[in-house]
Length: 165
Image 1: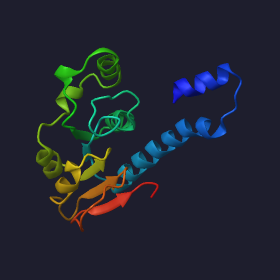
Image 2: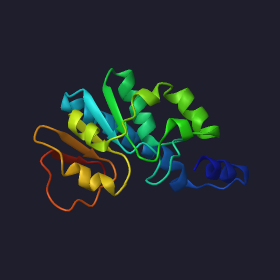
Image 3: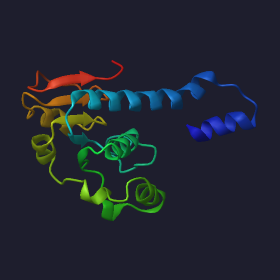
Image 4: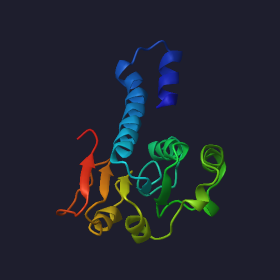
């Protein structure tokens, strides 16, 4: 997105819709943060950490930005993303994480069930199909904030909320 905006500026092309995307994305991250804060709960589980399901690309991932903000406010985080392995990160992706959340490895969990069980608020950050099944294991008293609108196959026990849908 930034490259497209830069190129448009180079050729003196006005692209108001494209120029509005990054500020809109920032507002959605702020809205997610506000919803988490409003729950009053401090054990937060992030399901999906990469930019999109099936990739380990963490650069520009809104969930990374959200995690950084939550950590800064003192929240306890557990993160699950089967595609993200600190040992396998390389290049710009590795550099990005080392600069943004250097202690990421201590927050990653190998088992999705652990994140669901030990979190009072679950934030769904991408549309990995395994998250649909995982949310079936939620309990009353938990809050699920779905940022991507998973295609749930039925009801769940948790208080289910979404953003922009």
